Image: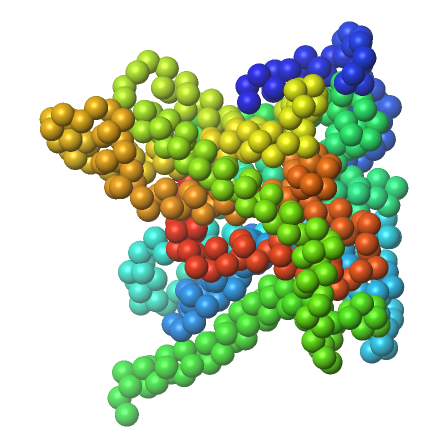
Length: 267
Length: 286
């Protein structure tokens, strides 16, 4: 793994189609990426939106469901099993099924129209303004159950006596959640945040499966754009430059995390 | 009625009220989680005409022939065999190599083992895209694309860091006394590993095996890049290609979706405790 990674750095400095002779062009690939490639810049915006959504929606869903599951006293295992099933379904099937359900004519739109809700029948994957969010929806559907299980594991380690004590002191449910649950879950939350950021920057499966980055690059991510450059346009050097840039962004995130830890903030 | 009784009654009442709401919300979430899979199940038994007439509906008369046609003509039988080979080999390889590496890292004090750990952590966080381009070019030149072993080799590489870190954290928690006893009795290192360590580490190994089986079965990014020939495609790639080519054959697509997810979902439901424990241990400590 180390060798191809370093090879990627070297390749990113070349103009190469993968077969013929490679020309050394220095940092030209990177200059083109940041100044002359609107798709690349758009992809950066898309992964930032992706990160923002994935840091909030699935975390809220997972944490909410996990807290509810700890409250009830029956069917706990039933719910945690069912909620985790989508996580084990392959991304192709999730993406393929949702893409079909979001089809402009066939899918849910035909059901909506049949029930007089035609105004809600949007071009889920064909409208450039909402395509990215439709793709995110499918991915959130398949992802949040995993967070729910992680939070359940974390919640199980919290001492129940703390809640008893707080209840005796007259604390409300919300206060207990804010003052006991969230602080004690902080290691899990930080881990989830870091994981989410890393995976959002490299997300590939869902945009590739559902929209091929379209319409008109409206849902391209860094990974899909790299992939199309490598496979469809045979520009190995340019694709490597995208991959190296992605890694650069991730290193910034990790460095920020390490820096805050070194500063003594126990995050 | 004393004040205590009133308080108890009130609490009881609140409890009885709170639960239906919690159950209601959870039921809605569970229904949302299962709905697309149920739609797949229902559509796998409907004819193409019926599905294109309405995406959601009950099969009026079950069309079982969808299953045979998807299995034979759509090529899922070959893809299923390929997926089995890839997953089984990946699991065997990762468990063996990661087991040996993790045991060494956990027990043998050598200089540089800290560096190996850092290297594994970096391997865990580096995006797969970073090594796709050089790997793709190398694999084309070595004729390892469109080759199941070529893909298995990649999977060994990408799942090794996770496996090693997961097993290492487990080996550290084991007491070394049993191993020392075996050594006193004249076992060599490999015998100690096979006769003593592996049986004790069995729960962790099963966890790892289940997780890697599901991941390699579902893996898409590398599979779709390296397997273009239908004879070597895994079920995930086969399903993806099928989506594009036969987009009107909705019944076969539904069956294909079920073929792809039947193995991981069954695995998970049967072995869910191991699965979740492994993910929590490997992920949270890694």
